Image 1: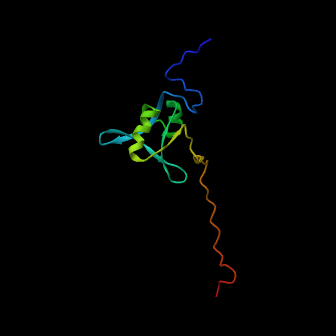
Image 2: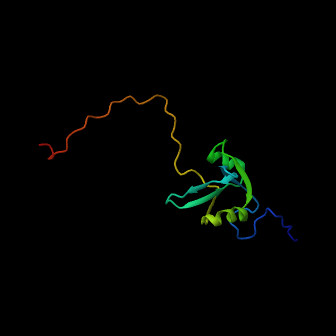
Image 3: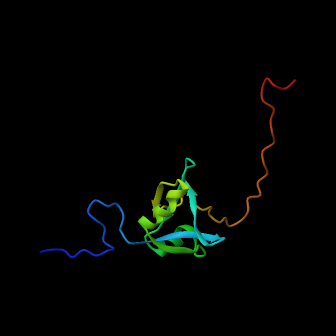
Length: 118
């Protein structure tokens, strides 16, 4: 039986689905500009999400985005020298948990280090 191929289906061996990606943007002088992010080691990277819900879960409801195919996003990144693209990244630091009451314990008194006091 032969399989019918559609434009949004990945080719065998592709790590991510082909087709539309949700790309976060920010306002720019000519409309909107793709947001670039930093990797943990400081390199520049673009990010994209496979669906609006994933984008909102990481960047929040107020984050504007546009739909782009991966080749179009890579073409936009190329003149900027950005070669890395992260798809469906997650936050690396957990959000601080809300505390029920502020901590009111006093800080310990500073003690001089032994051998340094004269």
